Length: 159
Image (cartoon, rainbow, N blue to C red; front, side, top):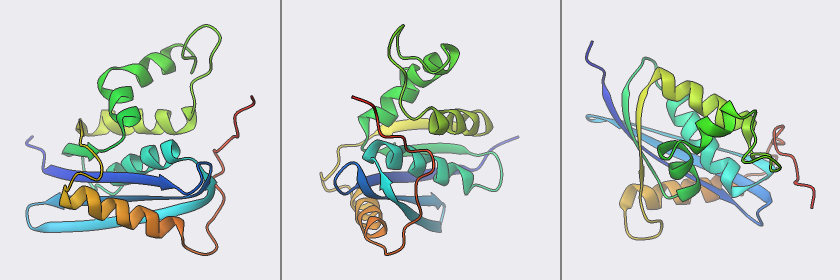
């Protein structure tokens, strides 16, 4: 079966990091376009980057071939270099003594990547890419919304 090809741009933002955060995604298939955004009251930039990718993939009604653009090297590298899969295989440990951050989100994202055929592409942020800039604006606007819900998965790291 030939899958639809969807181009997705995603971005996440946290004001203060941690602080209020927002995520955004723009999905394009042919002439069809959909924008998604949301936020949480206390979260991190990295969580918002991952959630943006998750929400983009969750919005698809059937398995698709997806080219997902992100300006987060953390997100792109964790998937394309196999880090997230390795962390999962190792019980969400980065190494023998260091826990991986955001395992709740990585697990969901990895599941969605098995449903869809996803190619993650890194794009430089704030470099004039129109859709990346629009995602950035939507994510920042979402972070500023009043009455943001809590990010139930965010756990402040112990130092």
